[in-house]
Image (tube, rainbow, N blue to C red):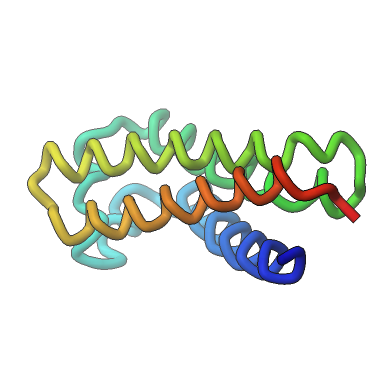
Length: 126
C-alpha cells in the first residue's frame, strides 16, 4: 500500500506543481489560451490567479516533502485535505459555469486527495 500511496502522491504533486508554476509564470491571456478548459480565469482577478497558483504549488510541496524527509509527516495528509478542499472550490466554479464534464474531473481529483489523506493518516511513514 505504501508504494501505491507514494506513486499517487508523486504524480498528483507533479501535476499540481506544474499547474501552479504555470499559473504563476504565465500571463492571464496566455494561460487562458492554453485550452477550452481555462475560461474560468475570466471570473477571477490577477491577484486571485496568483493566489490559486501559489496554493497549488505549496500544496504540491506539502504532499511530498514532509513524508519524504520524515519531518512533521502529519503535514502530508493535511496538505492532501487542503487540496481536496481546493478541488471542492474548483468543482463549485465548474458547477456555476455549468461545465459538467470538467466538474466531474475536479471531483475525481477531490477523490484522489481524499484517498491520499486517508492513506497518509492511517499508514505510518516509513
